[in-house]
Image (cartoon, rainbow, N blue to C red; front, side, top):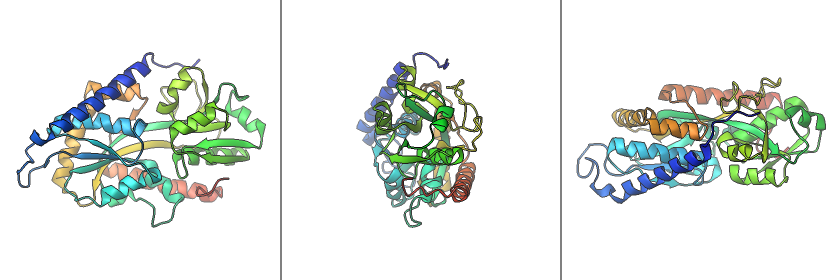
Amino acid sequence: MIQLPSGRNVRRGAVSALAVTATLSAAACGGNLGGGAGGGDEFPQGPITMLVGQDAGGSTDLIARALAEGASEELGVAMPVENAPGANGALAANQLAEEDPNGQHLMVINASLTAITPLAVSDEEAVDINDYEVVTGVSRDDYVLVTAAASDYDSLQDVVDAGGGLKFGTTGVGTGSQLAQELLFEQAGVDGTAVPFTGGSPTLTAVLGEEVDVAAVQLGEAIAQIEAGELVPLVTFSEDTNQYLPDVPTAVEEGYEVRVSQYRAVVAPAGTPEEVVEELRTAFTAVFETDSYRSFNEDNLLTPHEIEPAQVTEEWTGYLEEYRGMVEEYGIDLSEER
């Protein structure tokens, strides 16, 4: 039996709605907020835009809105969230890189964009975390391998025993969803074909409709269907047992060296003054300590990873090199379907 806190879906919707309402309300009065209006070198100089490289409603978007709500109050200016989906977040990252480095434009960035996507695209297209000023680490979101309740699979071993012909859905080329499954099935000797989609929602739809046999999605996006009994979680890809799925084994516990999670951080354009970055970090740190934000993490099954900028850069650069070595070892090409 999977043990999960009750009432999560109701709370998640309430928190998300509050975040959107607060952000819009702040934007409406942004012209009257903050010491930046005509304040010379003072920061902030009016509203601060928070970019998101994914569609509205997904995990990254919800995190950005929750952060923007709290930071807006801390900084005394509006912090509208702007979605610029495309290329796994590279479109928004490139947009941020072109902004003035004055702290008025930020982005909630996914680790997969800098630690996994570079393994699937050209060097010219790759996004490097070192090209940005990291403000703070934020949280971790674990991937879970799921199948439809109507499928013949009740465990990962069932998938392995089935042999070839497996179709596995991914949330896109160069994503953690793709990497986790490619590594798992290569190590398990399962002959499978990757079927890429454009995010978690269409991937889940494909699993539920049995267009694919299994898929790896972020837990926060799949939990409603898991709780409803429509999806069966087979394995997680976290380092340790996920606290929200205590009865579901990790890939490591099943004998496979696959550790892939989604981390997120807030970044600013390169060259943003240190004192501005510090003021932003102080604001987000205050948000992290509020009861409302802690509840947001719990409601959305997120594990806090609110680390310092240098640690973010070190970890994400390390993941890139680790994953590069693994795809070379197993002969995996993330730019192509298997």
